[in-house]
Length: 252
Image (cartoon, rainbow, N blue to C red):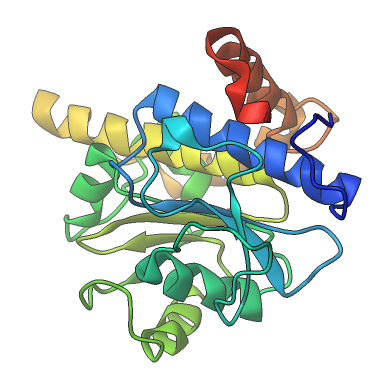
């Protein structure tokens, strides 16, 4: 959906990606998943393997719009003349995945209370709930090395991720990636629910792990309850309608 803010030399595909990503930032703010001006959701620019969109450093998620997102390449060079800086930690972490993983079109890193709490626990995500069972055997772990600004940590991030696309950054937070933004959104939402439930269950009593054979059936059958429009698409669209009723300025 184009608007007057679209630049003349911008492809319709890039503008659509910008609006989708801006909506996602507004949704995260609405859900309470923002962290002042920090953390990042990045999205590869369609048709440009070496370029991705990132939030302008210094703005809150509620201020992000399609036109003020910053387009950078995997070397960190600003490609769209944006006046905004880019958070060095966000670039370092996200660029390594965009560079080495062709399927990582959207990457989400957050510091939610529940996500950070679980990341600080030795056992990580336990298979104690509907949501956690969906992630059993699919989560990678990376030990905390301090703020992510050193390029050499990228090699260890890639090695620890392996063939998985969800990672717990120990003592730090969560990281998810996917071939589309709606799919990454749904992964993050589900992981966040798993972490919230684990924290609540630990406070309520003694959590009980779901048996491995039940997890296998659960993971096998999950696809049978999804609409045939792509993973996360109806979920994301529903939330776009919510934030659009609140404030539609993200489109500009």
